[in-house]
Length: 469
Image 1 (cartoon, rainbow, N blue to C red):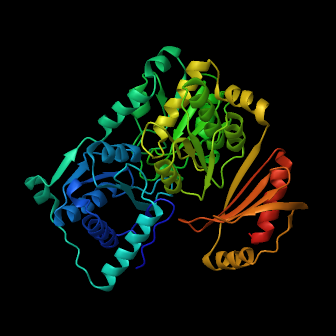
Image 2: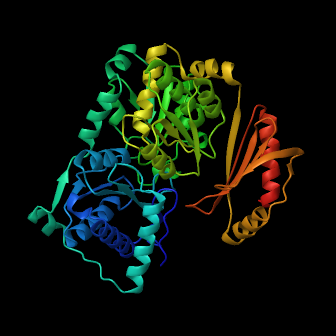
Image 3: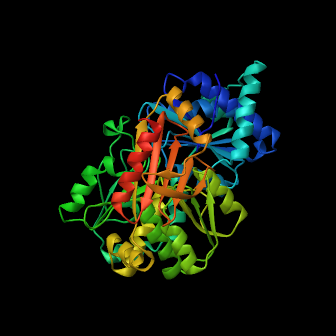
């Protein structure tokens, strides 16, 4: 079994590749890594989401930690990923582990590693972990597993509330009193995930849908994108609510619905929040975005005179930038956004609160906030489509694109290209097309942005022709 970490952690199908046996191998390598790096003495935080067997998987990791003599704080219930990351930071722990497959379909589960700074494991770290798993398998390194009950009895494993300290941090960061007094009629969809109950707890009066426990997530992946938020859009469109907010399965990503009931993508959220942080809250610093993120961020950074960084897809790359530079805000297309003054981690719950704060301070809805920005920097249309692709077809496509030679697409001449993560073709007017196979699923992702929606459609159709899907 070869264990590979994707854009954020190791994921697999439950009872296929994600088994207790394989999980134990990854956990043992993680404990070996902590000992090797001198982190074991600082302890380990372990959390889990609401997926099938997540609690049991988390308890297995705690048993491996105890077997390796590592002090462990195990969450007393399901928790959002940013709460676990905050606990790592607050406790000064050596690392954290979150059992979650984030936005992946219900049949998946996963293992996210959080480093001592309270953010996603950096690529250099996950590479070492992959190597250590392989070495342990090759050398038949035994998994050192202690019964969880023994670990708890000895005090080596402590069962703790990781959510309450995290909520205290959110109260410090956002003006909840202002939000509450503004009387914004908001509805949140946590998509049956680990973020349920938290926003209504922080801001009394917020209505919640899909807050019950449902490991099948209502029959679709807990990813806050337009095709999964139809009910949220309908609720807002009915006229009682001014905004809809959505969280993914482990609440580190955000989606939204504006006052018209239209899906409000992460690109729009990033744009609105960057302006809010800079103009209303007076936060300063650079900006970092991934290769698949809207050009509106480029233009806003230019308008404000802020340094702009671009990274491959995956918040771990943004995290590295936040550690090495003074970053005001970082974000990615999939709804992961992080801000200065918190931890270098994406946080869907904090972003939802900041959206409400922006509305409360401005007295405007999300659509109005976006329109006033677009009126200054230009109007943009963005679409992403996900298509199934088998490994053989993916291999052929990668060979074809790596060979180069594409100089025009859909009749538009390619002015520049960026192959840092996937294959991004940029045209003279700033519009672009990105062709990228997923790092965690058998999926081909196609992205495009332009000032004209017709051009977006033409570019995506041409991309499907290139990929033969």
